[in-house]
Image (cartoon, rainbow, N blue to C red; front, side, top):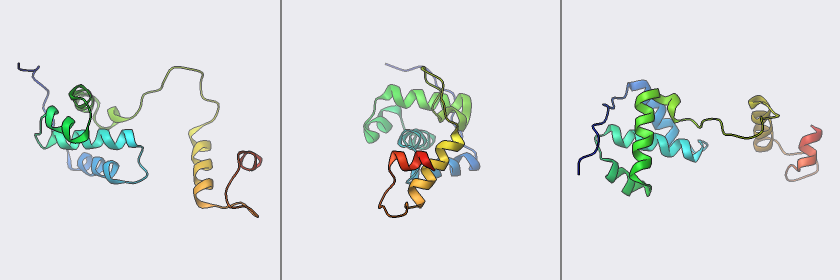
Length: 120
């Protein structure tokens, strides 16, 4: 059974570097890293079936992310906003908390507590 013809997937050098960085960086969100691996593997002319088998995911998932990349390029691999209440904190505030917890230790303690972070 033949599938639908797919749009060509050709990566620029910049896209290749970006995707390889996302796929190999330890601090990249795992969902984004997996999507980058999917696109890189599909760009090497591998089939959805072989990519899915190697990554332990479904062929539909491989096809979905490949097609989103072809339509929207790297921006298509990021998570879309989800339904629910609007966010009450900004991305900058989230980044500040993450950086503080990873790079600083509070005085007289071994790790941050929620209350100590909130005070700061």
